Length: 286
Image (cartoon, rainbow, N blue to C red):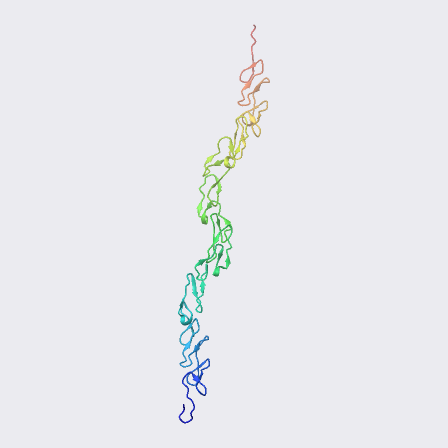
């Protein structure tokens, strides 16, 4: 106490008539006359003025956040994040990178989900998956485009439409498997085999309906009539006086004689002979 007045001279951190009151928050030193310089809610020691920083802050005046990957009081905690941008300096909670979630960012986004916190839905067509980080669509075989909406261009197939069809007589191939789409009249893995005799069309699945030995087109099934026949299925013989392919030739037989519808040879009427039936037969007395 003061030797003359008897008043108490308080130690740092104490105040009051009898030095029995601790310094109020925000002050320190002899008589609690000095102001604390602690930031972000830090409390100071009433005696020394040293700052006691709240969780997440450090340095002399609690002005700095904890260094990366540390948190808590005195920054003594270590973050336990796997796929993260960092952790909260206050409580160590993880800030996950795009494509990851969970308390420690160790769980990838479920299928069809992407982005920060896995809170975005993929916008991809035809069952395509998307990149969990960027949301970019990963197109399945046979499709292309930003959203996998476009089929592979004709003549290509497979992943990324990077393979070329290996077909001979075809109008493209399956965009997923590469299987050739054979043109009518062709068959086989590469469409190099013509239809077997008597069949036509795609896959050679149609049967020819031509008659009298006629052949049919393997492409459209149309009949090619042999000489002497006509009609869609070659079902009708040439009319009298006509012969040959498509019955386009006229017979040259005389004296009312007919001709063979196939080769035009004359079939002489009774009493006539010769190549054109122009010679009269001689009657020999019996």
